[in-house]
Image 1 (cartoon, rainbow, N blue to C red):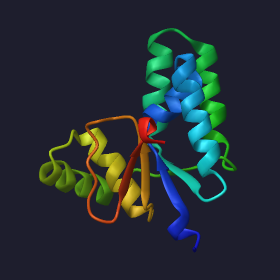
Image 2: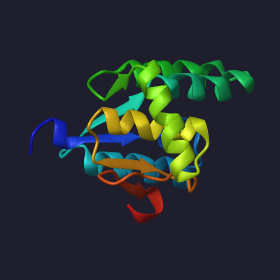
Image 3: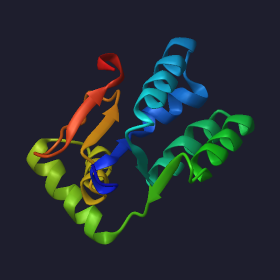
Image 4: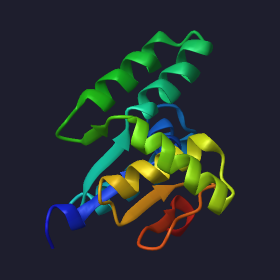
Length: 140
């Protein structure tokens, strides 16, 4: 398996569970990622930073915001993929063809562009094109 084949896309909600989830979801997210870690390198979108921080800052929870900053800046843990115009255009195509919200289709387009073969999420609104497998935390 090459490095490109071993990339896994981590959706925002999984990372939110690690910092702000209830005990069950926090443990489930951590256990799932820990079990996948030996086989995969983790990728997410730069958009994830904004999604995570928005919730923490809206609640006035500066500790959570700082924990997200630390987690998402840890390049040994996860790679942040940039948002580009071509990704936005691909996201629009995916959103239209797979009936997804733009933000969800942007995550899927990013996973696709980064060569991820697996997308871990707990979002039932995520749809995947051919070549990208979805795994929910409940299935992990």
